[in-house]
Amino acid sequence: MIKYYNRKENKYEIEKVAGEKYLNWSYCSPVGIGLVELLLKKKLFSKLYGYYCDTKISCKKIESFIEDFNIDMSLYQKTPDQYSSFNEFFIRELNPDGRIIPSNDNALISPCDGKISAYENIDLDGLVQIKGFTYSLKELVEDNEIYNLYHGGTCLIFRLCPTDYHRFHFIDSGVCGETTKIKGHYYSVNPIALKNVKKLFCQNKREWSIFHSDNFSDVIYMEVGATCVGSIIQGYTPNVRITKGEEKGYFKFGGSTVILFFKKGVVKMNEEILTQTKLGFETSVTLGEKIGLK
Image (tube, rainbow, N blue to C red; front, side, top):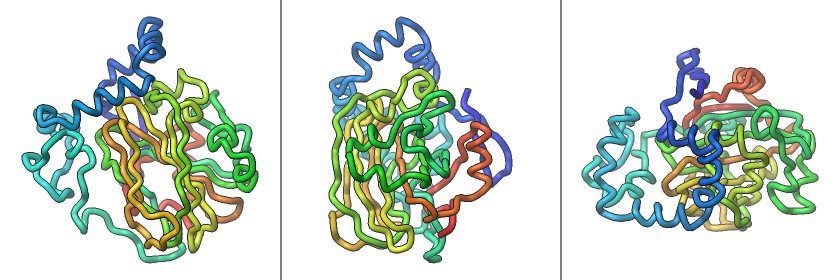
């Protein structure tokens, strides 16, 4: 059971998890853990499932998925019957008015839909994965110089579950550098897995870039893949100016994670989000929602 905080409704809710029984068995039982290590964390498994999700046959999953997880299709450009595969549905695009992007330069917005955890004053060698599990920024980015610039800064982790809108966007206007790609495994990023796999983010496939933001200095923008995420697709053009809210890329099928690192003193996070993180709860957010200030 995963409980999160809905700040719009000012209440806690229970997340409806796709494949929850399978996740519990895979990451909490000896046999399941063995299967994860032998097969499920491997690239081949996610790649093969990705191929299936690209086929016409996979369309039969769409209607039941929408019904089971109460997805509001009025927010999206296509109706369910217009998608040619489950993956096309999974990376569905919003209507132009599907999300509102605040024009205020001082407002830090969420780059995606998902559940956020926020950490201020970060220790570069003790970043929090989940209570009891930590990792280092150096291990995460595999760069000996960049990570030192973020001591005492802010780390934001956005967990996208399979039912979420799976495109990620820029939090500000500015210029984004080249993407660094790091090969890795494909563990689930669900809290069930995070509680059982040490340094999971440092083990999974991931990509990161430096976003030279107009209002929030240089931000490390990272995407982490997960089980059945066949691809992380970067849609932006490196070193070309972009505008706030513009799409950066998208994940193919599966739960996945976006992680942002800010330098010390650059951003002041919403107190409600910080409080919930300290209490051990993620907070639900949507693309464009204000989560902090300059």
